[in-house]
Image (cartoon, one colour):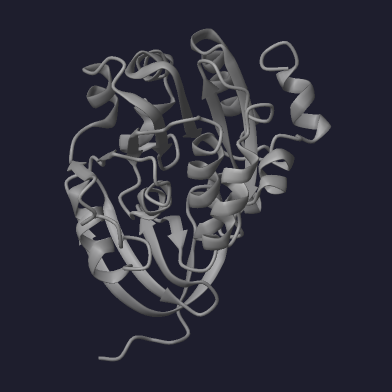
Amino acid sequence: MPFESSIWIEELYEMENGRTMKLKVTDKLATYDSKFQRIEIYDTKAFGRMLVLDGVFMTTEVDEMGYHEMLAHVPMCVHPNPKRVLVIGGGDGGTLREVLKHKEVEKADICEIDGDVIRLCREYMPALSCSFDDPRVTVYTEDGAKFIAERKKAYDIILVDSSDPIGPAAVLFSEEFYKNLSECLDDDGIASTQSESIFYHPNVIITLAQYNKKFFKVPSYYFTMVPTYPSGMIGFSFCSKKYHPIKDLKEEKAKALTRQLRYYNPDIHRGAFALPQFIRSKLEGIIY
């Protein structure tokens, strides 16, 4: 039976708050109930292929670069020699793909709790998942919070490519996690963690900023635009033990990298840390 071409799907995460997003889908490519969640992959009319987890839009082919490039390249272009990199979550492969564009990387580990996300994205979203077979990559299908708690000074960069603070990702938004994140990084390490929307989730951002300040010498927050995410934008906690996100930006490295990119460039890097006053005022005394 052919797929009904008039089907629309709604994003569930913000519905209880009276807001949602609806996309027209042209085909359902996969649906699977894993041990952790329902995984669905669709073809959409406006955004290409899309990954959905438990009814929440995770990533689409058209706008994923705003998320994956900014999560990866902001810290990677600040650290002077990011040889050892860990991605927590990120089963679609987009963040890993961006990490491996840096020639300094010798070791790229990815710890995704749900191996079925990796399996299905490798099959249906190859534009994102194209780097899993790189010889520098080791895949761990484990709990990311437990993974970092068992390792000390193991990485130069840690990128937390998590879903929202519900279900299996909730632990990645805890104080204990940020403490372990700091201890898992080397003495000059940097982490970047998915930290929600300045318009919709200011209380989450404030809480994470407090953890960031407690465990990192140079805490900050930056944002990017992703049309299919709640409010059309999402932000990241920049958690640095030594380097400043703007003063220590490696300008020439960032410029050279942009030939391969669609979103990130040095001007976007700097501008992403310039926050609107309504959220900056809430972070006064914490990270400003």
